[in-house]
Length: 151
Image 1 (tube, helix red, strand yellow):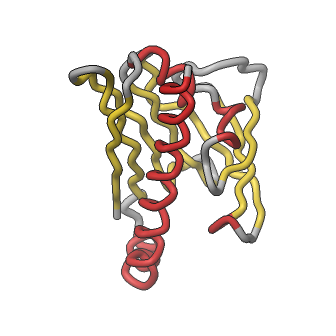
Image 2 (image 1 turned 90 degrees about the vertical axis):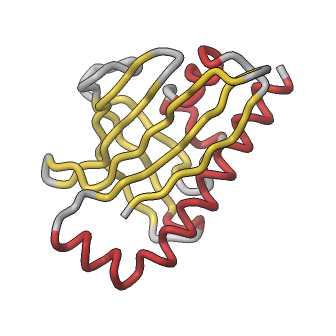
């Protein structure tokens, strides 16, 4: 009930982290989440900060808002947030950055909460959704790479 994609970027981790942790710019990179905004007076990433993302599932629809909460926020190293329903995490997304050679290895990952409804969903549709998520993560990371390497 998880997946990940790693891509090498010829840029410093701090520069990449600034992009992945600025949720207001997610629409520039993600094939599904086309906008996001901080909530409750938050103006940037911090553990516990909440934001909502506007999602167009599979790039076609349905279109809906998700409520999210930052779970880990370590500049240059990690940005992790949970998509919540009823105040409980249903899916956790993470970006982890590791200096490597001439740049940074960036891993984007997701992990569904191990609840009975999610286990049933994953058993029935997970094979397709997991592939869609991995394709989307790859496109997201490629778009981020293209931006930081062009700078």
